[in-house]
Length: 287
Ligand code: A3P
Image (cartoon, rainbow, N blue to C red):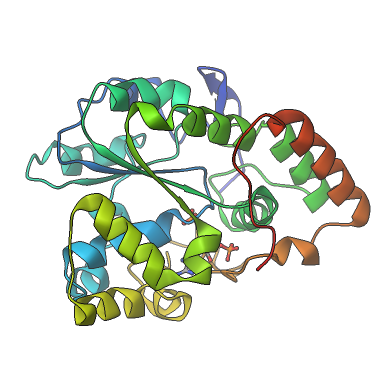
């Protein structure tokens, strides 16, 4: 499959034209959320699949049957992809919905609703590395070129779903205008049980310790890596080239240190400071 370039923009954000249509983005923008919808919002590579698994297991009370039989994109479909319409018209709640859209596009619809939002962030150096490796596998995304070339595009925000900086600034600064729980990838990595507890509390889903144990056990990196319903091995190699890498790649905090040169790191820090200096949110670069 020939690699295509990011050519289309919608509300100032880059989208590969073959992945989303104007109609699918408008559909997402004007989506009528239901009161019991639970919406996972992330910038790509920030722990989306992980949170989809956590939600599935919480609502299954720690039983892995759904997690092992239904792909994550059916359990918690992406709102901005046209293909998942049928799943989303099902009005039996709670529905799990996923989106990578920026606040400016999706935020207003969520503000109008009473849906619960879980916004997951990850430190952007690890996001950039993970996104780079994903681009190498994903034949539906532009060829990332060298890490240096990709990193520059990431910092400019000319990658799929736009600028990481704008994403985080947008959702973080409007977090109090909706029912939003902020979770971080690094906290999940540091203490998964505590993170699951926080999600349960936010959702009003009390659980017995043995149920929590089940959730935790099925949401570890090792277990998820072996689960074909979340490790994306079900996706045909023409779409995701599994010879180029694995979706469940490393699952670490601080892997960026293996990729960034000293110059790249200094440049990243400079851009980060310029773009996020007023943000009252900090990130964990290593554990
Ligand atoms: P790496 O490429 O750094 O390994 P998303 O689901 O948002 O696309 O994010 C994918 C990233 O989350 C990948 O990061 C993947 O390995 C990591 N991930 C998924 N499940 C995880 C888990 N249970 N524990 C730690 N990392 C996980």
